[in-house]
Length: 142
Image (cartoon, rainbow, N blue to C red; front, top):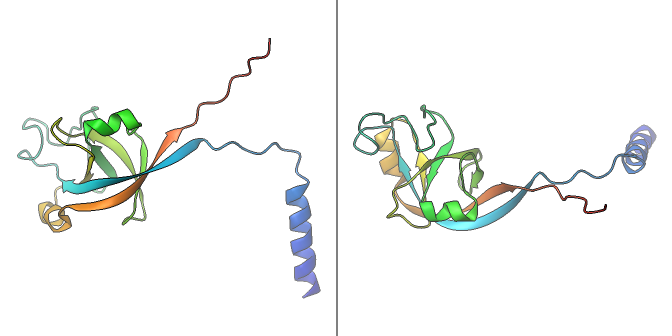
């Protein structure tokens, strides 16, 4: 028991006496309620010639954790490769595709070629969190 207490004490001292400055967060997270649906790499849901090519030119493959966003969300910072957490999934998704201009406040979760899985998902209102990179502060001293 004394050993455990001593180890905890040493750990606390080593953590509090570090000379390194505190690390700044590299991203700021924002929350948003959206309507979520699902989509697939099939010609009748995407561009006919290349159903696996996303709007920014990424090649989508089954199993990828990617989403498409409605174009109004681009203004909020949900742009290409933005990290997104979806409240019903444990994984982090990345924005790789854009939706048609008619959609508002909506995301599409990529489900590969499994059309039935996408249909079973349906349409849900849910919370997402997305990460915007923090710009480093510039020193304005002459």
